[in-house]
Image (cartoon, rainbow, N blue to C red; front, top):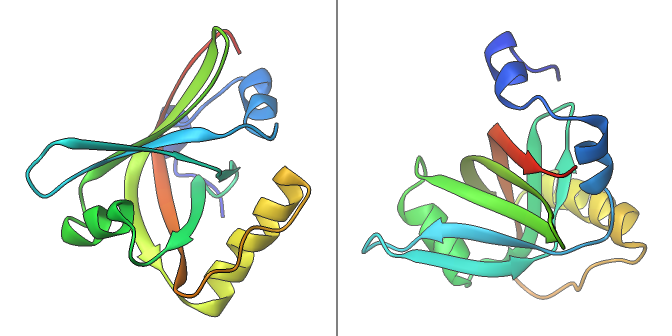
Length: 138
């Protein structure tokens, strides 16, 4: 999938930022609780730059999943930091439990982190359609 000209501009990033997002760091996923307060969670994630998708594997009972399901068009942010370098990915999220989407999340996770993720009951993938990228020092 290629990005539309509007999304391509919004998600343009340097080659250094793309490389930064392939290193096996964790990030922080920010969602909004139903009362509007922020919920921040450390997560492992992957970023598929050509598709403009970030993926987070989790389980269907977590607060982050409940937040996304409660407000499916709400904005979320995912930020990876290492020292004074950081990249933030912003967009809208959806929760998917279809075997093909979860398997794609597992494949990409395994590639990035060099081992498979845990396989708990109720595993889902949160896919974030990234429409804004912010970065510093990468």
